[in-house]
Length: 221
Image (cartoon, rainbow, N blue to C red; front, side):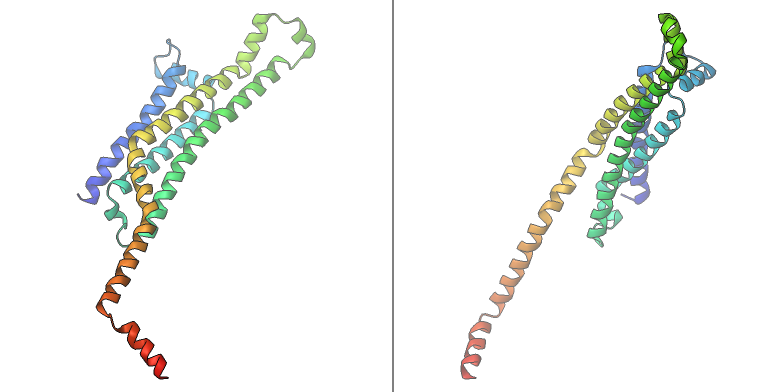
């Protein structure tokens, strides 16, 4: 298998995972009336605000690093596993950690924007304490919506659902190969020790008189 073929085979599933996460998470919070691009843009601004760009950037980075991780696990010989095993293991561990970082960051964006939306909504609703006591429930609700309560709720849903789907995508896409890689790494030290012992045994079997001769020489001195 050529390097180009491996790259092509790994890139498409990685992009598919990222796109699926984005689409499913967005559909879970998208109202039924959103259809055209302009309406969707308004809905996106109202429900996600500037967090949509951060969510999108994290999804892209997650898909890129997950794809790289899968390629290196599928074809280790193409990425220096034979010539530089330590460097190869270090790179796989780095990509594994990066994908986890993007998952946690995706969830973290949802948490942070939840707090931002709640704070903004409360500031708008309680900006005038005198009027806040006399406002009707409908008026208070409108102020909360205008202030950012939808932003808080929507980012919570997108961050939580998207994070779990990203974890699921990583498990399905690279989980088995990653498990095999770490399992082989755990046993590599033991295999190296066994190989060293076997090499020493072969050397001793090839020179059976080395030890007695050495002892006789020491006695003569």
